Length: 241
Image (cartoon, rainbow, N blue to C red; front, side):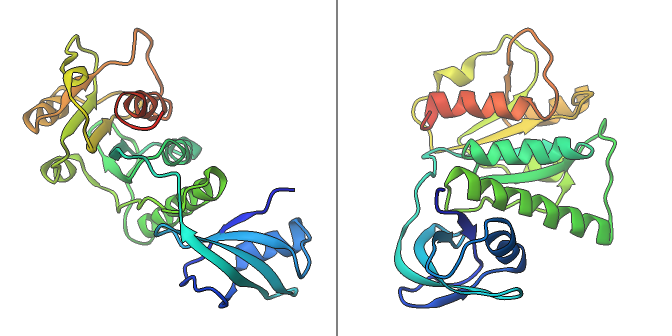
């Protein structure tokens, strides 16, 4: 069995002991049934990774001792900020999970005109924590040591006003292929609308913010499928695929 990879929000220092978070501790002890002396990998979410050995495995407490610390790998040279219209249920989870696997640098859930999800107060905070957990789990699986932030949901207009990436793309049927003419770039913003698509006014707002249209072929893609295809395309042209 391959050594499990676990995210720990703690400093990684050779010789130091790290108490695993509750969920990871249960997974290591109750699911994987690892014993003292077993090896695993830890990462701090900020780009550092460590090899470690379990030195204590109890019902309520699991401790790993760090042996080596290195810079993590798996980060793309292309930093993509994904603006994703919020969708219901596990569709949003899927979009976030796959975006992280495809090397996205940051994700902002967006409130849009045709979106049918509105979050407030405690419900928004819980959903944001859940989405960040999805990103962490995706990093554990795919080998990234840097966890992309999932920013608090915001209106589309607010997100558009803050954009400064070199290349900005909005998923929209068009014949404009100017984005392909770009030379090597280091940053991009990608806007994905909801199941019903962005409104004409929202597309105009994006175009006014210097977003170029990106068309993904003749078939209509679901809102959770679109970022997978678009990110793969960008990583192929400008990143590391």
